[in-house]
Image (cartoon, rainbow, N blue to C red; front, top):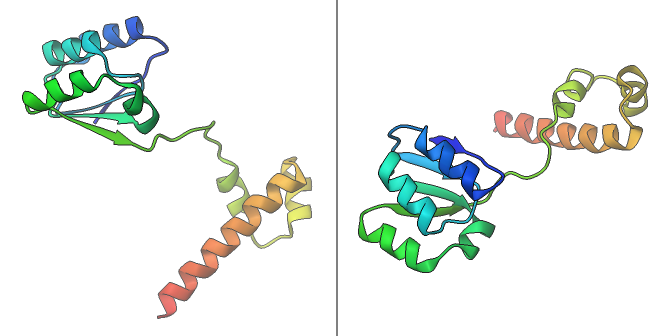
Length: 132
């Protein structure tokens, strides 16, 4: 799946023009007539993935028209927030206590506790599953 992420409609259309032929495309903006035309002309997708929030604001006529030419528009739950690697960092130190991890890594104690207990719970569930 090709991911096309843009801040505005014009930027998205430029990215669409340069994307080449793709069966599946993810876009992060509302689907409107201009974007749909650009997608059909430059990419010829079979499936267009779009965040649920943007799908709700997209033109229903455009979605229906795309369905008419065998292009499926699929709303998906988009990942939000800034990706971090705190889980990976804390996972290395699961043998230590949260306070020690905080001192070693310089990460706020509350943040360490949140991730520490979440990771411990996941680890315990996995071990329990493996034992059955």
